[in-house]
Amino acid sequence: MRPARLVTVSFAAAGIAAAALACCAPPATAAPAARTGPAARRAGGPAALTARGADLVNAAAGQSLWSRGLNAERPMASITKVMTALVVLRAGGLGREITITPADVSYVRRRDGSSAGLRAGDVLTARQLLEGLLLPSGCDAALALARAYGPGWPAFVAKMNATARALGMGRTHFANFDGLPWPTEDTTYSTPRDLITLGLAAMRRPVFRAIVAQRTHYLPATAEHQAYFWTNTNWLLGAYPGAFGIKTGFTLGAGYSLLFGARRDGHTLIGVVLDTSTTNPAASFAAAARLLNWGFRA
Image 1 (cartoon, helix red, strand yellow):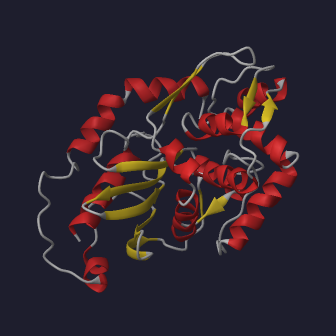
Image 2 (cartoon, helix red, strand yellow):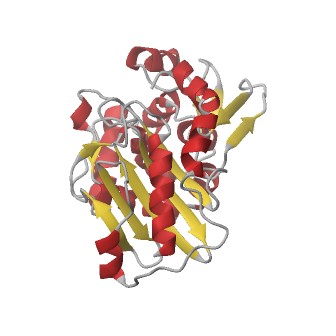
C-alpha cells in the first residue's frame, strides 16, 4: 500500500466503511439462534460472505464455528506484521532505543509500502515503533524493528519462521517482515487456521492488546524525535460494537484482508477474512461484521 493513498482512503472512505457496516450492524437485541451446537453452526454459515478464505473461532474454547478454505495457503499482506510484533514482544526490552536510518525511510518508497512517516535521525523506543507498526501499518517501523531485533532483517525473518513452527503454524512461511510482495507475492503466506493461531497468541500479550485496540495514537515531540500521530487502519474499531482489533492487510495479490476480534455478552470471537476484494477497501470490514453477527447469534 502506498503511504499517501493509505491515509487518504482511511479518511475519505470512512463513509463507505460506515455504509458497508450498517447493513451488518448488530441489532440492539440479538435474535435467538434457530439452531445450536457446533455441527449446526457449521452447517448454516453466514450468508453472502465475500472472502476466499475465512475462519471464525470461539476464543475461550478454541473452537472453529465456521470456515472457508481453512488450510488453503494465501498471501496475507500486512497481517504479517502481527508476527513481527510477536517476535519483538517475545524478545522483550521494549524500552530499547532504536535510531531511524535513511534506509528505513527510503524503504517504503522503494517497496511502495504503507508508512508510519518515520524520519531519519529520530530515536524511538521499540514500544513506540510497535505503535507505528500496528496502527498505520508502517513498513518503515517494521524494517527498523527487524534491523534491531534480528539483528538484521534476514535473522529476524528466521525468528518469525521459528516462532511460527513453535506455534504449530505448519502452513505458514515468512519471506519478509511486512507482507509486501517480495521476493514474490506468494513467498509470504499463511492459512485461515494458522492466522487464528497467530492472532490468539498475539492477543495473549497485554501490550499487543492495548496497541491494536486504539483508534489513534499521539506521540508528543521530544528532544529525540518529532511528534507523530497515527491512525489505525482498522475501520472496524468504533464502527462495530465490541471490536478490539486486530490487523488489516492489502496487496493486489492478497486482496483486502482482516484479522479481527470482538466481545459481546461475555463471549469473545476471533476471526479472519482473506481476499475479500481487490478494489473495495470496505469489503473486509463488511465481511468481518457479517461473520461476527452470525457467530454471536450462533
